[in-house]
Image (cartoon, rainbow, N blue to C red):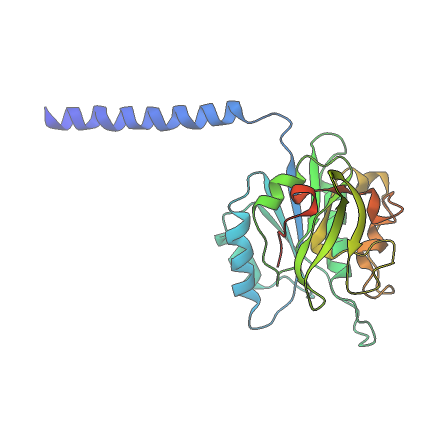
Length: 252
């Protein structure tokens, strides 16, 4: 008798769990925005701990797909095994950087490989998406990912501990949190795109509208502008401000 009661209780619990899952699926909007995070990585003793930190952060974010690109001739077991254990939806790629030591830019080939994967694996207009470039040695506030979901073309926000400063990023007009009027930056603040790689995200459709847009190894400390200028932006002032009118820092 007691065993029969236990069986009924277990079945009742399972039905409740299945019901909750079903309700959650139904309540999720059909046009949910997927955030595609592109992360270049290379081997060093801190590689796995830093990837673990990102995995922990991204696991708190819904509808996220993590594209990890190794600077390696072949994909390594270290990264492959790590991604298999990380619960975040992911894609594992590899792309080799130029061997010339005169190149002072890192991650361009890897980011380009990530963007090319998107062009080859999703259909423009079929699913709403956002592209974000997250380096593996940074720390991110999970809340910024929810803010970037509703961008129209491209958005920006302040970031912390950049170029020797406690923060850098956009500045909005007094009383007008939706209008960017300038940027605080330590390196060439008058350039058209005085922002950090972690300080912006773009609509994934732009990768299809501008199929040749890419990073390069020519413009040192200006890779952000190199890409943004190729996907339709004339300056960073055209980006949409986030983080409460550019008043909060969401990356370190």
